[in-house]
Image (cartoon, rainbow, N blue to C red):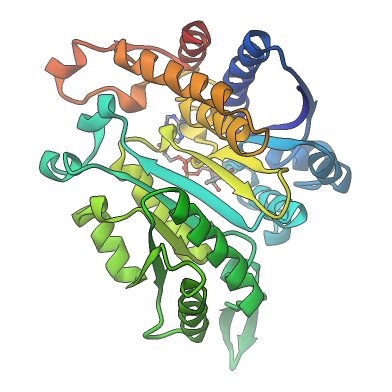
Length: 362
Ligand code: NAD
């Protein structure tokens, strides 16, 4: 199969981790007889420096014309002072909106080899952590009107949180469909005790539940959900929630699995052209040091093969290779055991060495 992949290396550790994922994809192409063509796209701080725009239109067009997009991360201190609509992250929001990818799926799964890296008590981890957060990605407060004005001599800032029935229904369906393919339990997370948008959200989820009698729907307030994720994450199968709640809860969920560097994500809309990226940022504190963990990006590439290219065996091969490398004790710094005794059985490796080991294991 021939596939055209738009590649956004971005800023900070972005180029280092994406390069490892491309080596893994090259190995998959060689082993399974595919051809992957990479089309470089500038986005984020590097695009501001080069083009004066975090996502020039031609760059967005390249992404839309591709079979899927692989992204590292964008942003960094250098661009902190630029106006809001020109920030590197604005490029990312424009990319998501431009591609129409309204559903972000983030697995929170603990790798058995890294169980000790979870900050949770062993007794909680032993019950298992394996759930998915389905987050609405192109609506809600991040896409509402933002304004800062001076009223009666003081500054006042406003951000509007809006959701329409159709926006809620389409993400709700993804939640139910995802649950249907897994443990058939869907938890809808909102703040219906305070927000109108959440009351609408809840009513639509219950209307949809009638179409999915095989899926057990439950409701949870977002503040309770934040507690339950650390108290007993084994209770969750699929969580569906709106943009901002999903942003916050998915970072929390990633942390309980050990390291933010391990978690991939997929964002999809109505076509198979998806956006695949690790959930972490550009980690400027470790950029250029060859110590970043590339596994979140490598697993994002595996998700691309599985969900956009229908290449399940190829995705399995990548995931099995990661499993093998972890079992052999190889660890980047972020997943090294903090206990000195446990660390003795592990080998610390850098970003490019971790990539090489995964390629070798394939
Ligand atoms: P971050 O995720 O970049 O880093 C948080 C911490 O995790 C840091 O200590 C970092 O070193 C570590 N870390 C992250 N990824 C790692 C990896 N692969 N391997 C090892 N350690 C890793 O979050 P931040 O520091 O809040 O943000 C840094 C920049 O990234 C900011 O400019 C922010 O706006 C941007 N950001 C971008 C995205 C994106 O591109 N999708 C997402 C979040 C943040």
